[in-house]
Image 1: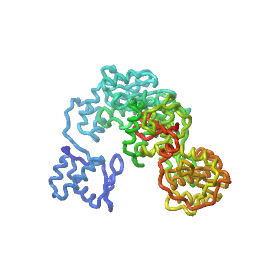
Image 2 (image 1 turned 120 degrees about the vertical axis):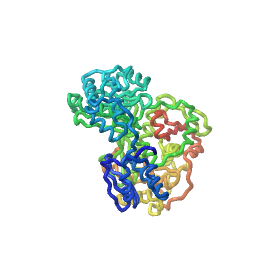
Image 3 (image 1 turned 60 degrees about the vertical axis):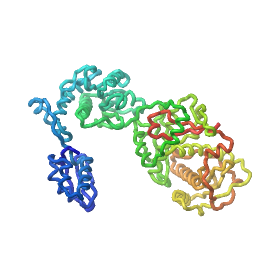
Image 4 (image 1 turned 90 degrees about the vertical axis):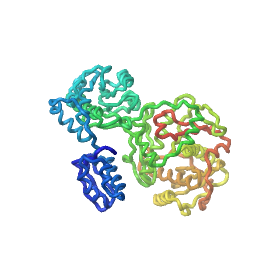
Length: 580
C-alpha cells in the first residue's frame, strides 16, 4: 500500500469493552479487539495524510506490525481512513475554481486529484437527446453540476443522456455500445418516470429496453404528472448521478438497476433487475451433466443469490412477506411470480420459522417461473433410464416441477411429486387396511416433534396412516375429525411423515382462518375400511424416488428448466420430471 493514509476528519469513535465503535459519514462501524481503542488513539496523530502504511508499520516493534497492518487495512476497507496520493495536474482557471468550489470540495472529500477529476468532467462533451421540456431542464441541471458542453451530438459525446417514451430510442443505445460511451436513460411513459443510471451498454447491461421486458405494470395512481417541479427534481437527481459516475465517485452497478420516480411524493425508489437471458443451446445431455457436476448451494448462498430475483416491479418474484396471513401453527409467506405471459400467480411457503417459510416460497416461486418460461413447443429432456436425449410435449399443470439447492435434490423433489400422486391414486383400491401411526411414539426429529405438538393442540381428533404402496416410497395420509385432509411422501418415513403433518397443519390453519391462498389441494378421502389400528412408526432405509419410478415400469424424463438464462445462472437447479 504505497498511498498515504488520512483519517477522515469527521470520523468519531469511542472505545468499548470489546472493541471500538466508529461513527463514520457512511454509517457506524465496529472494530473488535480489547486493545483496538488504545491502538487507534496512538495511531490517529500519524494518520494525517503524510505517511504510508509501510512507513507507519516500520516504526513499530516487529511483534506489533501485523496487528497494526490489519487494523489500518480494515479502516481503509470500511471507509474510516482514506488513501491519499499525489495530486494530478489540472488546467482549471481561477474563475472556474471559485465558481465550482463546492463540487471540487465534494470530490476532494472522497477522492484524490479533485480538481483534475472535475476538469475532465467539465470538459466532457455531453449529448442530451430526445424530445419534450425535460431535455432543456436536464441540460440546465448538468450545467449546474459544472458540465460546460451539454449540446454535443451523440456521435461526438463522451456521455449521452436519452429522454424517451420507452418504446423508441434503441438506436442510441446501439451507438453508445459501439463507441463504448456511457449512457443514461430517462423514460416517461404510462404516467411514470424511470431513469437508468449511467452505464456502458453491452458492457454493463442493456438498459431500459432490456429491463422493460420484466416490468410489471403499475396500479393506477393519482400522480402529479411531470410538471415543472417534478421535472426539476428528476433532472437534478439524474445530473447528480452523472456527475458521480463521470468523476469516479461511483462505478458500474454490480446488479443492473432502474430508479423509479414517484411524481406524487417526489420520492425515488431503486429497482434491481436481471437481464432477460436466452436459453442454453448446448445439447440437453451436456446441460444435465453440467448441472449434476455443479456444486450445490447452502441456505446462506441461496439467500444471497435470490436477492436479485426479488423486486415488486422488475423482479422475477415480488417481495416475499407474511402480509396479513396467520402465523400459527406455521409461519406462512407468499409472493407473486412475474410470469413471462403477464400473469402473476401467487405462491406460498410455510415452515416452523419465518426463514424456512421464506426459502420455501422462493424455491416454489422460482420453480413456477421456470416452468412458465419454458417454450410452448417440445422440450428437450434426458431419459433417466438410458441417458438418451428425448423431446417431450409440455405437460399441463406443474406436477414434477421442482427447484432445489442442488441437482439431485431438485430431481428427487420432482420425482417425489409423482410418487405421491401415484401412491394416493392406488391407496383407495387397496384391500388390506393400512397401519395407523401412534403419534405419541414419534420422536427424535425436532420439526416432527413440533408438528405433533401442534396437532395435539388443535383440539380436533387426528389420525395418521401409512399408505405406502407398491412404489415403496414412504407415504402417509392424515385425517382431521375423520376427514382426510393431506398426504405426504418422502425419501424415508420421517421425511414423509413430516411432510404429511406439515400439510395437515396448513389445512387446519387455512380452514380456521379463512385463508385459502395457502391451503393444500383437496385430496381423496381414505375409506374407513382401510384405516387400521395405530402402531409405532416404522423405520426404513432411504429410497430413491426416481429409481422407484423406474422400477415400477415408468420412464422418467428430466427437463432442465433453464430457458431464462439469467435466472438459471442465479438458481440453476430447477427441473421438470415428466413420466412416460
